[in-house]
Image (cartoon, rainbow, N blue to C red; front, side):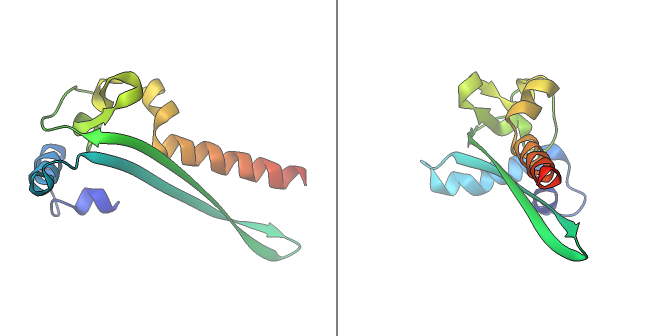
Length: 118
Protein backbone atom coordinates (compact mmCIF):
# COMPACT_ATOMS: atom_id res chain seq x y z
CA UNK A 1 0.00 0.00 0.00
CA UNK A 2 1.50 3.30 -1.04
CA UNK A 3 -0.23 5.28 1.72
CA UNK A 4 1.23 2.97 4.38
CA UNK A 5 4.73 4.09 3.34
CA UNK A 6 3.90 7.79 2.95
CA UNK A 7 5.17 8.84 6.40
CA UNK A 8 8.04 6.36 6.34
CA UNK A 9 8.57 2.69 7.07
CA UNK A 10 7.15 1.74 10.44
CA UNK A 11 5.07 4.93 10.82
CA UNK A 12 1.91 4.61 12.89
CA UNK A 13 -1.54 5.65 11.66
CA UNK A 14 -1.21 8.81 13.75
CA UNK A 15 2.20 9.55 12.19
CA UNK A 16 0.69 9.19 8.71
CA UNK A 17 -2.18 11.58 9.52
CA UNK A 18 0.14 14.18 11.06
CA UNK A 19 2.55 13.93 8.12
CA UNK A 20 -0.28 14.19 5.58
CA UNK A 21 -1.78 17.26 7.20
CA UNK A 22 1.63 18.87 7.69
CA UNK A 23 2.38 18.52 3.99
CA UNK A 24 -1.06 19.84 2.97
CA UNK A 25 -0.83 22.96 5.17
CA UNK A 26 1.36 24.47 2.45
CA UNK A 27 -1.72 24.55 0.21
CA UNK A 28 -3.90 26.38 2.74
CA UNK A 29 -7.14 26.29 0.72
CA UNK A 30 -6.79 22.79 -0.68
CA UNK A 31 -8.32 20.13 1.49
CA UNK A 32 -9.98 17.91 -1.10
CA UNK A 33 -9.22 14.23 -0.80
CA UNK A 34 -9.84 11.20 -2.92
CA UNK A 35 -9.46 7.54 -2.15
CA UNK A 36 -8.74 5.43 -5.23
CA UNK A 37 -8.59 1.65 -5.46
CA UNK A 38 -7.96 -0.47 -8.52
CA UNK A 39 -8.47 -4.24 -8.49
CA UNK A 40 -7.81 -6.59 -11.34
CA UNK A 41 -7.73 -10.25 -12.17
CA UNK A 42 -7.04 -12.37 -15.22
CA UNK A 43 -10.00 -14.17 -16.75
CA UNK A 44 -9.23 -17.28 -18.77
CA UNK A 45 -11.36 -18.17 -21.74
CA UNK A 46 -10.26 -20.85 -24.21
CA UNK A 47 -6.71 -20.58 -22.89
CA UNK A 48 -6.62 -16.85 -23.56
CA UNK A 49 -6.18 -14.53 -20.60
CA UNK A 50 -8.25 -11.35 -20.44
CA UNK A 51 -7.67 -8.69 -17.79
CA UNK A 52 -10.71 -7.65 -15.77
CA UNK A 53 -10.14 -4.25 -14.16
CA UNK A 54 -12.34 -2.38 -11.67
CA UNK A 55 -11.90 0.86 -9.82
CA UNK A 56 -13.52 2.70 -6.94
CA UNK A 57 -13.29 6.39 -6.03
CA UNK A 58 -14.30 7.99 -2.72
CA UNK A 59 -14.40 11.78 -2.61
CA UNK A 60 -13.96 13.67 0.63
CA UNK A 61 -11.93 16.31 2.43
CA UNK A 62 -8.90 16.36 4.69
CA UNK A 63 -9.59 17.52 8.24
CA UNK A 64 -7.11 19.59 10.20
CA UNK A 65 -7.37 17.25 13.21
CA UNK A 66 -8.32 13.59 13.74
CA UNK A 67 -11.92 12.67 14.67
CA UNK A 68 -13.27 9.24 15.61
CA UNK A 69 -11.89 5.97 16.85
CA UNK A 70 -12.89 3.44 14.16
CA UNK A 71 -10.98 2.41 11.09
CA UNK A 72 -7.29 2.81 10.36
CA UNK A 73 -4.83 4.88 8.38
CA UNK A 74 -6.31 8.17 7.23
CA UNK A 75 -9.88 7.45 8.43
CA UNK A 76 -9.69 10.00 11.31
CA UNK A 77 -8.77 12.85 8.92
CA UNK A 78 -10.95 11.85 5.93
CA UNK A 79 -14.22 13.84 6.04
CA UNK A 80 -17.23 12.18 4.41
CA UNK A 81 -19.55 15.00 3.26
CA UNK A 82 -22.60 12.82 2.57
CA UNK A 83 -22.56 11.62 6.20
CA UNK A 84 -21.23 14.81 7.77
CA UNK A 85 -18.54 12.98 9.72
CA UNK A 86 -15.04 11.54 9.52
CA UNK A 87 -14.58 8.08 8.06
CA UNK A 88 -13.37 6.95 11.51
CA UNK A 89 -16.85 7.73 12.90
CA UNK A 90 -18.66 5.38 10.49
CA UNK A 91 -19.56 1.81 11.28
CA UNK A 92 -17.61 -0.79 9.31
CA UNK A 93 -20.73 -1.67 7.29
CA UNK A 94 -21.40 1.93 6.25
CA UNK A 95 -17.73 2.60 5.52
CA UNK A 96 -17.51 -0.51 3.35
CA UNK A 97 -20.60 0.54 1.42
CA UNK A 98 -19.05 3.94 0.63
CA UNK A 99 -15.31 3.38 0.43
CA UNK A 100 -13.18 3.18 -2.68
CA UNK A 101 -12.16 -0.35 -1.72
CA UNK A 102 -15.76 -1.50 -1.34
CA UNK A 103 -16.73 0.12 -4.64
CA UNK A 104 -13.84 -1.52 -6.48
CA UNK A 105 -14.59 -4.94 -5.00
CA UNK A 106 -18.31 -4.74 -5.90
CA UNK A 107 -17.43 -3.57 -9.41
CA UNK A 108 -14.93 -6.40 -9.90
CA UNK A 109 -17.49 -8.92 -8.62
CA UNK A 110 -20.10 -7.57 -11.07
CA UNK A 111 -17.64 -7.73 -13.98
CA UNK A 112 -16.70 -11.32 -13.14
CA UNK A 113 -20.37 -12.34 -12.87
CA UNK A 114 -21.08 -10.70 -16.24
CA UNK A 115 -18.22 -12.69 -17.83
CA UNK A 116 -19.53 -15.93 -16.29
CA UNK A 117 -22.95 -15.33 -17.87
CA UNK A 118 -21.61 -14.51 -21.34
